[in-house]
Image 1 (cartoon, rainbow, N blue to C red):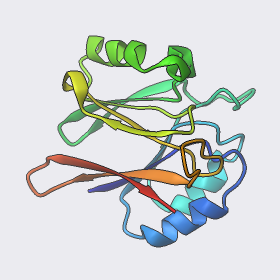
Image 2: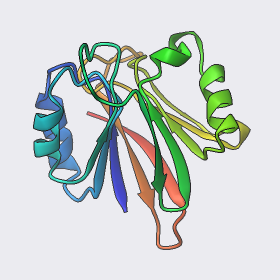
Image 3: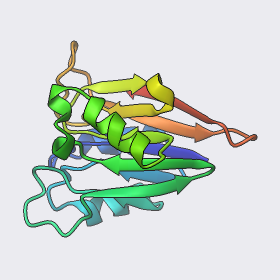
Image 4: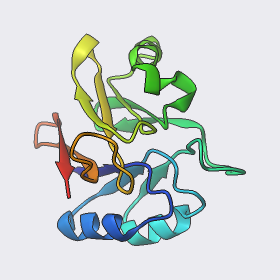
Length: 159
């Protein structure tokens, strides 16, 4: 199973189209917020099941603030992250995920990619498809793949 994880598209979809061309065999997409009203369009582009949560720029959205997903044997907390003050660090988010018994927590908001395996929880931020803020400012996304034994493998990729 191959899952594409993106965040912070902010109404700019050219890079998402390019990502989907590079990753044509995805089974699921997870969008971590700031779709700004384009969730139906993003679902159409994905052409596979889409899980999406609201971000701080999804004004008047009825999207869920966060979701708890089951992906294979993994419990995954999906959130934009702004309610956990992730711009100041990810410790509060990790504590929340640990307290809920999560194996993985995915968030956006900072526009900076992160993949951390500390405290027995995988913490993943795919960065931003549209407005990257990390050094080099390359648009980024993440892939989660479950192998034949059901083990998860994560990587961050750049355009």
